[in-house]
Image: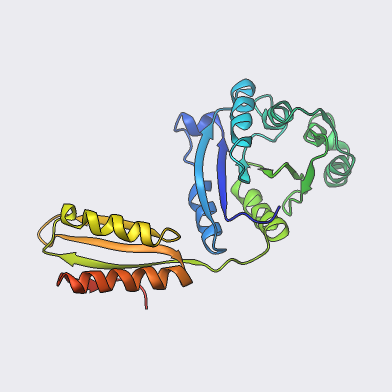
Length: 250
């Protein structure tokens, strides 16, 4: 499962779509990935409906990125993620012996008749340990399925990242300048040229309007390519005799 630095994020729940609850996963996942030099490529919210969720998972398979999916793996009638995942990946839903043993060990006789349903998982999936109540999540072809509750899901996310994506890529960084006295349109050709010359770094331009108007112009990327791109930016600004101030970086 190695080789990825970008992930998709799928949050499941009608309560998110209806705004009865606010999604807390986006901010946490983005921050967690950033500390590992990784990032989110996309973010989606899907409802609990089995048919729609299954179609969403069919679509996410086509993007060749790992997907982190939160919600809907419980045992209530509106928890359809396990079933939808099996349908989307064309496999059967079956009782996972290890998951069943974990649930029985945690709850004893109270595991029946409902909690044991959470041991019904897509065939060939791999379990994700749950340190809170031992009911596992699961991984299916680089789609990683977690419960919706943050106190359970976030430690499980850490385990997935450490287990399947343990390498620490050089962290992305950001360096920029504030440019005053020049409209953004006057910098278009410069930005286009810099983008072409430094394709491995991401150029950004953020106009700030008001009494103290300025343009924040800079690059994001790994340190090696960032240093070259940012040095080139400074040289170009100096050659044009533009007034600027460093605002980020060393």
